[in-house]
Each structure stands twice: as C-alpha cells, then as structure tokens.
Image (cartoon, rainbow, N blue to C red; front, side):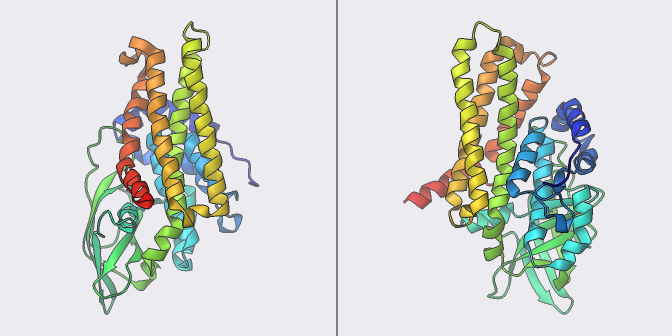
Length: 358
C-alpha cells in the first residue's frame, strides 16, 4: 500500500469506549467517523477509486485489528467495507461515483442487506423483498429483519430482490431517504449495541433502474461472497488475538504458565494457519469456485474464539466474575457469543459443508 496510515488515535478511542459500544448505543454515531478519519475504509481499495491500494486480505487484517479493541466497531467496519466492495465489483459506475467518496471517508453509512441473499444461494431461505416493474422503474415491498450500520442520520443498503417475472433476482441499492423505507428502532441485543442494528420495512418503495447494482443476484453474490465471508473472519481473528494476548500477559510470570502455555501456542498457530489460508484463497480466487473451503475457515475460527475465551477465563480465575476488575474480559465474553450466530450462522455453515460432502 502506498499510503502511511496514522491509526494511533482510533485505537485509543476504541479501547476507551469498547465497553460502552458493546452495552449501549450512545456512541454508535461516532464509530464510522472514527474509522473513516483513520483511513481504514480505504485499505484494499484501488488508488484509482480513492483508496490506499493493497488487497482484500489487507482489509481482513484491518478489520481484525479493530476487532482486537471492539467487536462492535469491527462489525460496523465489516458492513461498511463489504458495501464498498459491492460498489467496486459492480458495473454501475454512477452509484460508485456518487457514493464511494462518502463511504471511504466514513461520512456515509453503507449497509449490507445481502445476508438474506447469501442464505438464499445455499437454499436456506427465500428472498424477502419483491420487485414489481412499472413505468417509473421498480416498486419494492418486503422486509430486512436484521441489518447493521443503519445510521439514523442516513444510510444506503444493498438488497437482493425477487422479480414477479421469470427473470433472475437482482441487487439494488436503497437510500434511507427513499419514500417507503422505514427503519425500526435499534434492536435490543445482548451485546454489540453500538452497531446501529435495526430492521427495515419497505412499502411501495419506488426506485429507478439506476439504483440496480447488478441485474443478476445469482452471479453477483457468488462473486462477492469471498470478501463478504473473509471480512467476517476478521472479526474472529481480532477477538481471538485480543483474548490470547490478555491470557499471555496474565500467565507469563505465573506458576500456571507450563499448564496453559501449550494451549495458548496451539491456538496462536491455528490463527496463523487460518490467516495464511485466507490470504491464499483471496489471492488465487479459489474461494469463488470452492466456497466450502472458506466456510471451513470461518467454522474453525469460531471454534478458536470459544477456546480462546475459555482459556482466558481459566487464566483469570474468579477475578473474571468481578466486572469492575475485568470489564474487558466480560465484554469479550459477550462479543464471543455473537460469533456463532453471525449470518450465515455457524450451524448454517456446518450444514452447507455437510451437504457438500454427501
């Protein structure tokens, strides 16, 4: 990458506010500007489009670095960066020119409503939005029950929609200012409450053909799925690393070092192996034709998260139950509960892997 990025201030801000970002939404509107000011959304984006260059794996590493401090902020980062990736890979130059500058700067929120589409690809569920053509373009109706990075002050969201004709489903970009787009109040979550996560109802939303990101969701989604899932892997990588580093500091001069160190080293090695596999699969684009390999990496990383948290708990002992002394462990524990249910969920991925082998 050609640019030098000064991220020191954002790490301090994230570490200071990580507990609040997990427990409430008071600072939710500050996450995007903080990450954007640090230039993090530009990592892995071509310089010709306003980025710093680099690869998709560099973006994975950046998301992981944020997740070491706050999984909530990393979750927002994931949503924003995936939406940016959609614009980079789509042929709609107008949408890219209109919105990419604000997305890269963190002044405009981009949300990925394609979790439903990714499950649709695997035969898990049907599409939840329908499009009816009319003289003005398309009229949309439906619902997205769970979407992250829906800044109440304004957002864009990508969604897959089915058509009433025999045509393939398409990908569209909706604007929060479109009439008929209704954002719910923030969902009441057990954690990750600073992520601006809410539902969207669409009632007679009229959009023009210019808002169609891609005419064929069945070809577009497999093309962007490697980044969609690999960027998610950054969440698990960062959370595991933070937990393991906390364990290392706690036990390095402790009598239990010889008991826990082998497990610590084993988990660190598993993280390194997963990183190498992610980098290779993104580089050679093998995840496009072999998505199961990527599913297996995400499954493996989810297991490493749980084992890392369990190890940190053992190393902390009873002190882990004293929130005033170990707030960050308790936060990481709540964050870790989210990893298995992040769409596509661990169970859905395991089912897809099993089906591929039968």
